[in-house]
Image (tube, rainbow, N blue to C red):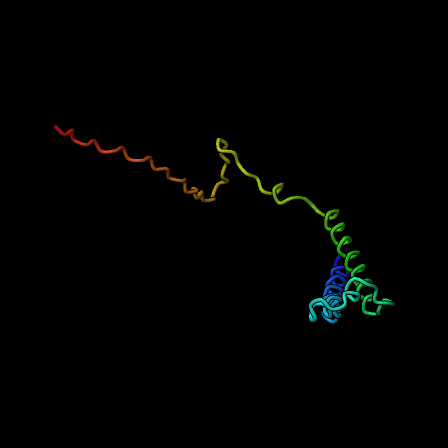
Amino acid sequence: MTTILTVVHIVVCFFMVIIVLLQHGKGADVGASFGGSSQSLFGTEGPVSLMNKLTTMVAVVFMVTSVSLAYISSTSSTGSLMNVIEQPSATEEKAVPAGEKVIPMPQAVVEEPAAPEAKPAQE
């Protein structure tokens, strides 16, 4: 189910990009003429074109597949990676089974600042 939904989601994504790039912008006429009639920008265009209806339908399918994939992902989670990794405390040492090598972890070397040299007193 998740695979089919993912494939549909990807196809819808590509289709939506193509549809949006093919559309003519609302403000293209006004932007080119600087102060021409702004009725086309803020007014109604008349009946909704086929491209606008198609864009709306594709956007709805995109949102439905997005929400569905998010829901499936959140409910099918088997756990966190942090539950699997066991972090030993600083005081705890683990027993090493016989025959295995122990590789010591390098410890951070903290250097203390050197004491300032004593200057000879001037007379």
